[in-house]
Length: 259
Length: 165
Image (cartoon, rainbow over all chains, first blue to last red; front, side, top):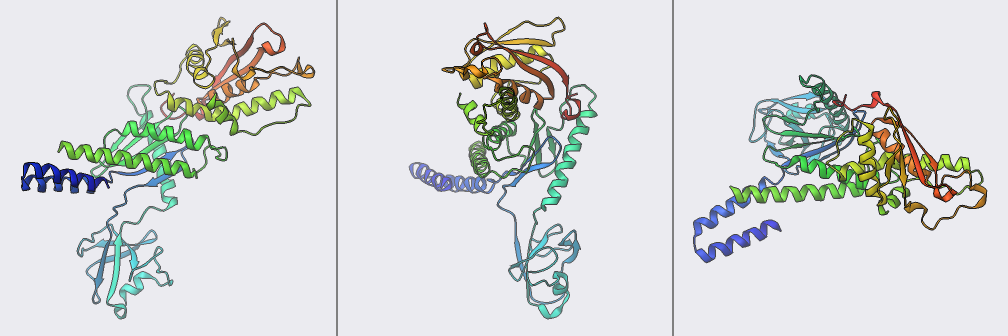
């Protein structure tokens, strides 16, 4: 809806000036902005002891590629890796190493087996199953993996504070990699809020504070929620989603205006 | 007031008034359960507050911001000991005890607002401070003033979050 409004605004502004080129560039900016809309990838909450109590992924534009292979053999090297069939080497279309098989002949798979309990690798290595359609994507980390990652981050956070050359340092506040930034905020009570965002996302500290407020309002005031346990509060999920969407819309709008 | 009522909903209620001593303990426990959750609410809505390093800072923030936010009153801080590890909180108008009269059988033993002691103890425990908190006088019982005595016991080292040592 926001997109339609912007298109209408652009139309009106170019009608009054009558410049087609300007209209085109404005449209391109809007398309770019909408495509950039998902800049907050995920939000995690860790309790005092380092256990993950909440995590949510927000990026909805996960790239998925479906390719139909007409015959055996296929130009990709696939291996079974930690419970999923991973592309180890080779490329085909947009499929690159790192992606894993998430569907065979449009039927979603679980781990190394299809819905009919057939091993995926067996199907792929059998010339009789061709033509075969495989869908590739990035599988989400399992709940166990996320738990492990959260505890590891908790330890890293503590180490970071300990190796500080100056006393009274905080733990990790920001962690930058090539493709994303991780921002973290620890409350005085020991609860950590961190989120994985795109580089272009600004105002992360403020957003983390907002999430802290939502946590106190919807999680802590819920009488049925035991402290330090995984969070299962509907209202918290809903309101968190609303806040994230709002932030993404304003950031996208602002970045489009400034560019 | 609204926040206190919201927080009270999150604890169990007691209907047993047979033994006032028991009730005192139960009120304190209720207060404790409220306190452990209230502290995050307070910290989230008061971002300017940082970790306190002295009991005086604690007393100051407790009265001027904590009590103000949840009960709408600002108690007085008095009677510091020489070692500055104990002080009194004097409440002039207790909103919890408005329109309340104690029945004669618990006139001498029941601390009506004991829930406040629990809240203070619970909240401070979540920021790694162990304190003893108890009433020494209550206008409902006929004393001159409503006074809570707070004594600092120790910092809870084992649950200290990283970087705060």
